[in-house]
Amino acid sequence: MQTLIFNTTTKKVTLLDDKLESFKVYGNISTVKCSELGFYEVMQKVDDESYASIPVFRAPIANTNMRIEK
Image 1 (cartoon, rainbow, N blue to C red):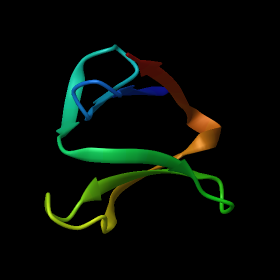
Image 2: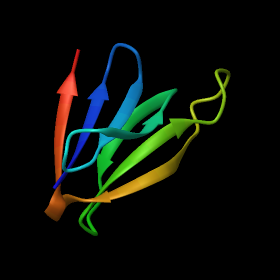
Image 3: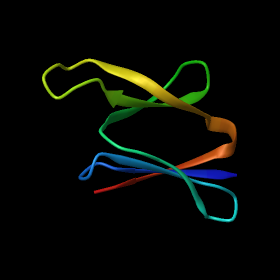
Image 4: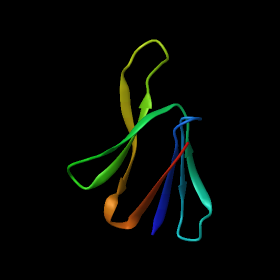
């Protein structure tokens, strides 16, 4: 199982492997969406002037724990 940690204050997502070692960090994250296809989608803002976001990472819900921090 991998763990996805979304910090809503710093707008950062950290992905941890099964040994809880960090192996991916994404910044400037607007939200993490639950896709209807069974994935968590990490959405990153394109720039500070627009509200547009793009998915930069997908993690399968079946083998990913998600934690939200403030």
